Length: 128
Image 1 (cartoon, one colour):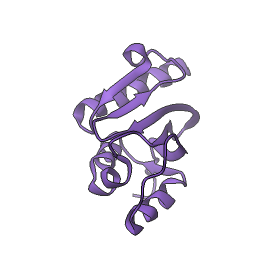
Image 2 (image 1 turned 120 degrees about the vertical axis):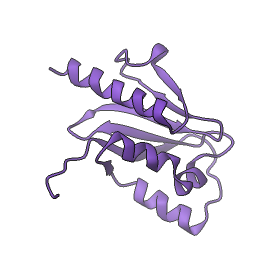
Image 3 (image 1 turned 30 degrees about the horizontal axis):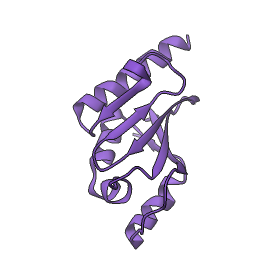
Image 4 (image 1 turned 90 degrees about the horizontal axis):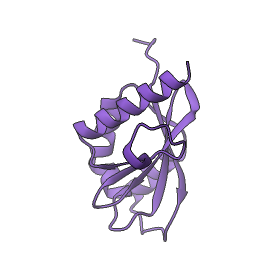
């Protein structure tokens, strides 16, 4: 297609707890995630979060890593993604009003897809 423009970006932002032992494939994924990754659709993003490699790398008993999820067309529009074994948490530090109490928590599924799409709609509408 060639003309497809990504919708979302994801990058490893910081570690918030002791770093777990990582296998070589997990280290490779981490290297990839330290660069700006992009997704053509919210569904692609959710599929990535549901993937075995991401879950084995990021979803430990206690949260240890924070990712920055952003809009491709405006990198100032971001959420923090904090994975744990129990759930995925989206934190809206910009307080856009997209999520109740500025937090969404759940799993990589249709509900998360709807939440991310709603956040995108809110921040795009606010930017106009």
